[in-house]
Length: 239
Ligand SMILES: [Zn+2]
Image 1 (cartoon, protein in one colour):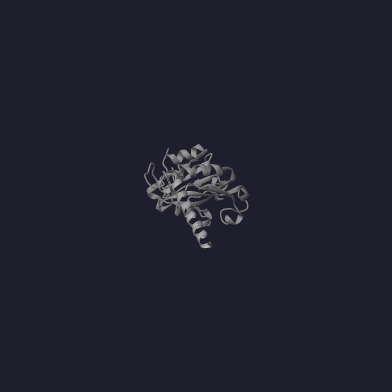
Image 2: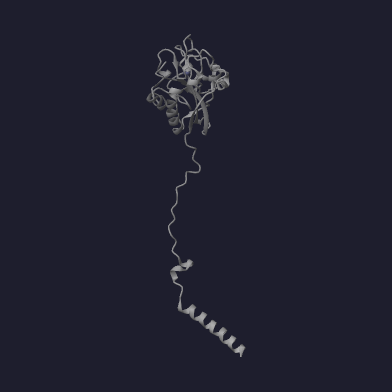
């Protein structure tokens, strides 16, 4: 008797299950295999092969960063100078990071101009503090080094140079030499760059975009001097 009851319950359960399956069909829309793909929002990615954007940083400069270029008695305290670390485009066609020391009042001018030069891919040989050459102006120029602050006298003068105030910068000095009124330069490796206009990588010519970029922030070009020409030299307010 007990066996019959169990068999009956089991059979009834199977029937109910079969009935439920056929009476409640699965809606086609809920079948993952038939779902319409939804549009997915895509965030644009930066160009993977593009160079890094221009970068700059202005920081205080310590006495020990200027072991040769600054001494007591200089017209500007090292506390009024700033180290500007910035991107520049190299002669090798690649981005680099350079360092330059200028007076704290002109850091915006320098960053503004060098951001343009970088965006133009305008090439610079190298940019180190002149202390890398023991503050020897001749050696720094011979190495085609772009630099600014150096507590020294103006060339051929007993007066302080604008470089001693951190308000002048020399750019690619080999390609843009200091040329005497008779057309000569002290640097053998710069002889072929004494005339203007001259074509070449990193050369500054009268009226070109580098001169204009400096002019917009109030810096004058030594290439416009009468007699002696200083094609590498830009200074705040001239001189
Ligand atoms: Zn100069």
